[in-house]
Image (cartoon, rainbow, N blue to C red; front, side, top):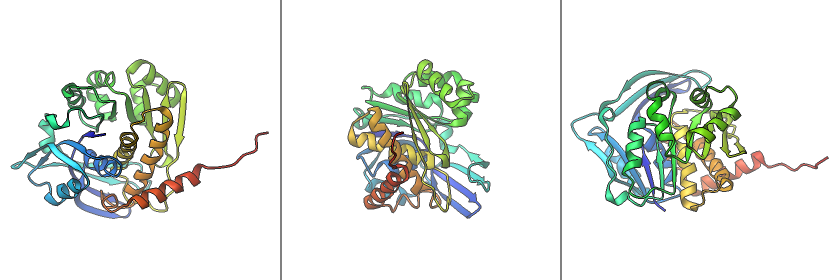
Length: 308
């Protein structure tokens, strides 16, 4: 039940109303791997790093069952670096610095040891890189999940639409769903994506307001756990994706009903992520922590009602 994860392994430098992180490890593939490794092994990582990426981080991920055959190491170059500052609402942020470094020329290579992976998740990278990975898979995975962002819709929409034809699940936020379709209503946007663009399932992430899952004429809403303090939202969407795909890979069940559970699992993992800067909280959570957090979600949405 192997899972292949494609995305960035990087450095972040974050400022929130709660403080400054300094230079810490981040990147979409890093967050996805930390979350998914609680549910499935091996995790076949595909990324690129510079010689500055800390060996202790690689060792910690390796101990969680993450394989690095598909991670290119360019010893004389620097890893991708992003710096940003969050506003008081913790939903809006300003990008202060983006240095692509090794990510700028990234050409992923899928090693033979990764072939036969049943589950594939494409983190937020260029559509060309995402398509390259799909084409390198000799056997199509049972499920392909893809994340993207508004930037690619602005500069590479044609390439993005080609990749969308190849994937099963698309992950976007509400603004991106509207931008992709030109629809104001999220229900109409979902219908357009599912009927004309390729994916069979659509997840619209709404940050602190939860997530929506669409499939055919079905809709499911998962709330976000109300937290007293959101310390750092960076990586929460990727952590959500890691929990989501991790649960599906563990259960090998890609039905709509099981995806409902997977969305709750993803939301639970994201609720851990925001409690610390970077992957700090994800590095220390136990299966007991996850079970307790899932129970909180059950209590949050469970109610009895007498039908009139």
